[in-house]
Image 1 (cartoon, rainbow, N blue to C red):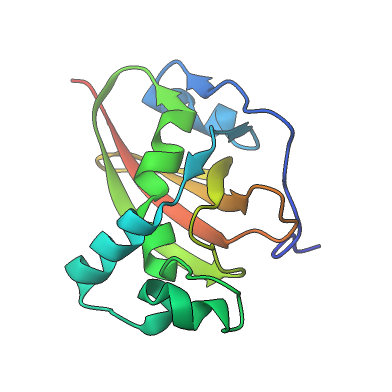
Image 2: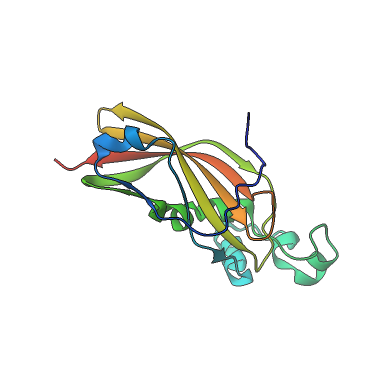
Length: 166
């Protein structure tokens, strides 16, 4: 059964997933961790609009957005996605790592808009670990929750490469 679009909201943050070594990542598959709340302020939305040159009124014009479909301005979907490192990177701690890097995304779904002033957080579930020449490629499902809202903002299948210390 797919959990896309279903709420994963938990009441409190959890401890990070601790993995003793890169080689042990496969043993951690199935574990889940939830992070702290983070507020998406209008100033951040404005800065993202400037950085990406996406100045659509739904993100920036509070007066017009008040009569729009969400009653206020909303964060860009790509802004929410760009916060994955801030929201999720502390949820998995792996020992003996020389380097960890973003390997990409297999799937991203924007399910619900994030209104300005909302608080969001990440829940990460480790879904796969594949040994590759450089180390281990870890697959995770990251869900960005919106405080007080049942439907998540986004769900992404992320990939990270963990390279062990020599």
